[in-house]
Image (cartoon, rainbow, N blue to C red):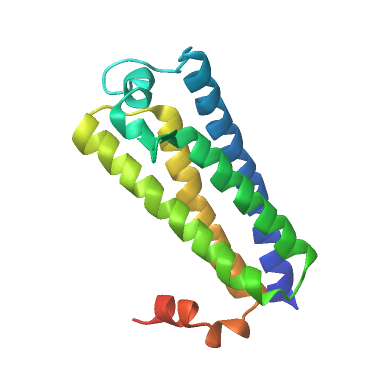
Length: 162
């Protein structure tokens, strides 16, 4: 019973973290559509405008901030659904997959920023930190909330192998 409470608490924290990511993506999208890049640092390697106007700022013709908005919205919906529907095995599988996809995309974009563009956007870094945090929180929350389920899902068995 204690594991379930801890799992629910971790999911609630994940919602707050997702909202931070959503607001970050919303601000990046606002800067993109207005062309008004108001970054906190904008010195040295921190150049939001250059990063967000680079060719890498679009994926499939859509600015990555819009993809971020879609991702964080989806995760928030899945998190709320997971809290409402206690034993929903569908969410126990797809929520970590969504978090893993967000993590992978964030890692890719951060590598592009550092090694290809050689400049960094602090709001993009915040999104990457949020993605890492979300993945870890969701991983622990699902393990706590549905501990008996983890022996049945291949996804979790794969992650738990040494």
